[in-house]
Structure formats: C-alpha cells, structure tokens
Length: 444
Image (cartoon, rainbow, N blue to C red):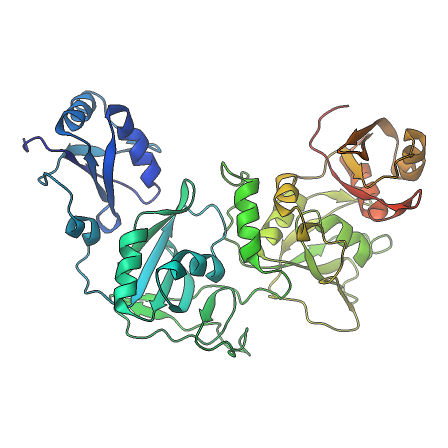
C-alpha cells in the first residue's frame, strides 16, 4: 500500500462529477487545501490540510464504497506528498504553453455565450478572439489571447473553477492552433480585433471546423441567433432565477430562436394574441402569420433559452378549441417584410425589466391568472366583467402588494384562462393598461 499522504488520488471521476461533488465527499474529514481535476484521465488529486485528515478519510472509505451521482469512485493515497504548481498545471496533458486555450465546460445549466466567456477570461489579459462550438463531449470554446504569458495566467487561475455556483465548470488545456480564423461576429464567435465582420453567413456554413490535437471540432449550430436582445444580460438573470438549477426538461443549451406554431385557430388568432402568449417566456422580436398555411405562424424569440422555455411550456396547450403544436423552426430568424410584425422595440416585452422574476414565474398554462397594473379603485366586479366572456370565473381575489392593486382570477380550466390572457393582456381597464400572466398558485 502506498505510504500515507495528505494527497488523495481519486479515480473514475466522470465528466458529470463536479469540483463541488468531490469537496462534499471529503470535507467531513477536514479542511481541503487543494483540488486538481484531471479531466483527460477521469481522475482527481485532492490535498487535505494534514495527513491525519487524509488517513481518516481513507479509513472510512475502505469500509464504505464512495459514490457520486450514482457512480462509484475509487480512492487511494497519492504518491505525491504535496501538490505543487506543476502538478496543478499538468491536468493530464503535457502540451506546450500557447496563447490559444481549448476550454471544455462541464455540467452546463445556464447558457454560455461569447459575452459570458469574455467576461470570465478578459480580466487576465487582452482576449483577441473567441469561437464556441458543440462537440459530442459537450460545449467547448477556443480563447485566443494576445500573449502566451496571459493565457498561462488565465489557465492557472481558472482551471477547475465554476462560472456559476455548482455548475459550468471550466476544464482548460493549451490548444495546438497558431491562429483562430473567425468569419462572423455573433453570439457564437467574435473577433475583438475586427468589429466590422458580418454577423451571419450568406448561404454558407456559419463557421469552419477547427483541428486541435488531431481532432476536428466542427461548429454544429443552426445559424446565428436573431437580432434584438443580447443573451449576456439574460445569463445573470437566469442564474438568479434558478439558483438550484434549471426547471426539469430545460437544457439551457438550445441556440434556435425561431419557433413554428401550428394548429392555431386562424379565425380567432392574430399576431398580437400570439405575442401576448409567447411573451410570457421571453422577449419577442418578430411574428409572421403564414398566409399560405393559415393555421401556422413563426415566432422569433429574443434568444435560444427563451425559445426553449416557450416550446417546453406551450407544446400541447389548448387555445380556441385547438391543441397547439409548438416546435423549433428550420429558419434562424424571421425576415422583415409586409407580412411580418416587428416587436423588437415594443414596450410590452416583459423581459426588458425584472427578467429574473419573469423567468422564475414561467410555467405551463394554468387555470389561475395573475392580473397586475390595475387602477387603485378597481373592484372585483369590474375585473370579473372584463374577463368573464372567456369562461366561467370560479373565484377571484383582489389584493394590494407594494401599494399596487393586483388580482388572482380562477377559471374552470386552463384553456379559458389562456384565452383570457391572450385576449385581455395589455387592454385598458378603468384607464390602466393591465398585465396578465399565469399564476402557479393552486387555490384562492
């Protein structure tokens, strides 16, 4: 058996296992002073404050099989007595330092864009170029610094760190590339030395693949996202809205902004009603009703995350007697034209302010709607009279919060509540433009 050491060697550390997972496994036995994730080898090195703490941990796990996220991990004393800077920088790969870093991001719960990466890496030096791409192993990026010394500093400081608490862990290696070739400036790639690059391709694949260490890293996006609302601001709001992780069924990795909605009732639906429904899940850029297919429409959301929320929560919803089909469109955006309604500058877009709160309230259609921005002297009878044409109202509750009148209105079923929302959101009641959203409150 290896001689006891402060350093513990952990094997079978899968990509789904985070730095925090390992810390929780060993923190009951004492202070952990260093942790190195050897992602290329599915291993880790962990240094306790003293040998006694390491011995306690090893004795305990000699009788109990340690397991993380359903995966058994195997522990032993390391041949190292102390983790040195060289050990911490090795990370299972002996590449020569280079000004270009290959960054793999594990346990992605929130959207990662060029802006997010630039915010993380630019404090360590001048970032010239960034390219992001999806690989079978997950989300990756190439970060090109102006100087090699800067990239070394960034790698030493950021390796193994999380972009957000408990997720989006950075695994950083030196790339074999000499220079990044960037063709477009958008949310997937950026040349900070050439701001005049176009934002989207013209009839070509968005970005050519990159070779690194003999492997190809092809760009697999469906095209650049639409104009309107930069995702960088949303990333912070998403993290604040979902501190414990995204809702079940939401990946946070979708990059398609445009949605196709089919089986709509063409006699009762229009662009404004679609706006009222889809704006619950994000800002709306454009909407186009397909005249050659009257029961189809295209909706372009502000970014891929907002589009994913809308597809997830509205698929199969009932509206005007028909069950909506909501899917991602093959088109990256909606072109302007006489049949297209542009909402990019609409002050009715909900996510320009209080985005975190609005994300938190996203849900599938419910029987209960929440009505706000009401006049101060409004009565329950006036609210009922304004909404009852859409179905029997079971109950109402008028209340005041932060000095503003609000109401909960319970309908017989979800379809009636949805109809009331799409028809009456942003209408006038007693001289005030009211706001309506679905409520997750079960009863009044």
